[in-house]
Length: 275
Image (cartoon, rainbow, N blue to C red; front, side):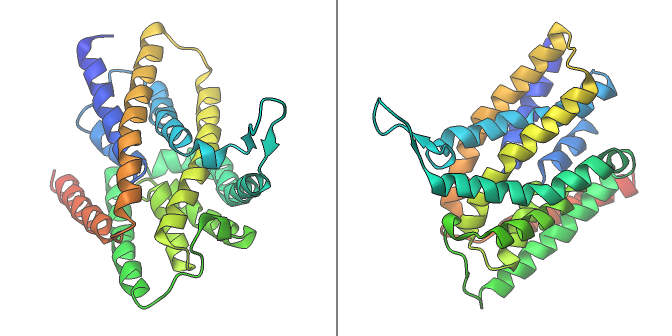
């Protein structure tokens, strides 16, 4: 391991921390950056790294929302108090995870082998960028039917989970697909963003476990160090980005992210078509 590789990982951690929560596709950005700044590691390790580094970002969510996420509240030193509303919310998250878990287990290897290309990423960026702009324009004439996180039903959670399946295609964005789905079925921006944070926790831990299992849990010191550095950087950056996003969407819509996706997608398409 040398300084150049460490700097590359720090850059990737910053990109992961920014793009994991903004609906612009973290995996898509990581794969695009890898076209220009390639880690000097095996393809097997890199495949695992691009997923497991996201755990750092997810831990930031746990830190920021632990009061809403942890059902065991210690009211006194004698006995814990269980908050049933939080347990109910986690059960809804489990329901939302079912479609994505099934599709990932069945098709993840095939998708990685055939769809992890710059052209696919660019097309997904453009398509869902247009979707964001269209849906937000449409929503100006609608009133959300689900205003708070606690108002999300099991049916709504499952429908959001169906939209999350779309994120198996790189460039789509897990947060982007769930937000698009939530907005379409009448969930408010704040509620669907918070539900996306909850949903990311089991999804990323599950994906990371699968990738680690495939990799074999056997690391050299350099490999483990690079992974930990990337996770720490992603964690710190995510703390800032999540706070920004929650404040931003209270006053603004998601159109700016749609325009960003479209512009980036066009640039990527032109670059790789005429390369």
